[in-house]
Length: 383
Image (cartoon, rainbow, N blue to C red):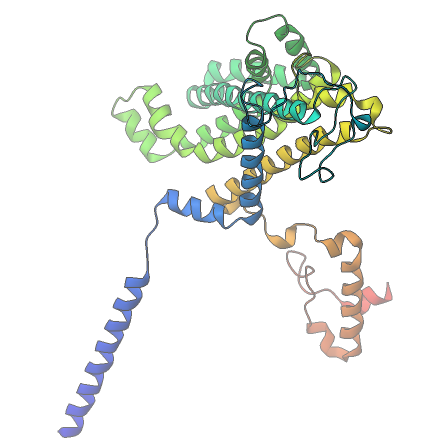
């Protein structure tokens, strides 16, 4: 009798300990909302976080150094002011203090090149974000209408989209860019018109999302209750497509800044006396071999902005939809690019063959997934 009582007491103590441990573990667990999960995933993406810091730094530097209008910033020189050329216009950065009088040097007319690059970065950023905003709004509108209403509405909108896609983007953008030069509004008008030729990708993506969402139960329930199509699209479909919209809008910024750079380089974008990064490269392309800093400073800003925005878009895509996250082994590694990965595999084959018949059971990396099992090592070595 005493033995049975002691065993019962032991079971009771074990159950109490298990319950206490479960309660302790539940206390440690913390539930996160969808926005918190997205934020945690994004900040765990180190390249995206570093790129966000770089992009914010460039924006703050460009708009605070010479002011939003080109005047009133902490930098005392204007991008339109001409001065005598000092020391052949060479940069004074790290030579006369940290920045010196002309940290990026001077152009052929004696203008401060730091102020010119900052003004060019301002204009390029305004165009890039303006194009991304206008193209996103237009693309979402066209894609949502085509995906929801189907029928002749979808046929008409998609044929218009296909027509715009067929025309070369740079040629169509050059036409709109030259037309914008004769209109008031300057940079904002150029951004709006360029957005009218870059919306097609967003429209096709949003249409595909809306087509899949049309078959969901909550959309069918809202339709059965007599909800207006505009309410269904705005309240039910677009919020569930916001991940695709945000990610592709981010990539549109990088594409827009490269498009603006190309147009300004060809003479169809922002014109003198204003400045843009592409215009600075166009104006100083002949000085590449003699005064290379006039070419490299705006070029480095273009590369930094475009890469930063692309990495931010990468991080947003992985954070909003982890299913689309690319696995690390699918990306080319440095060893694979340099050709060392194949040598390592050959060494593994030789080592496995030296082990005798047991080598047939040794799986090799990247060779057993989806290819019908483990390869015959001896046949590969004979070949």
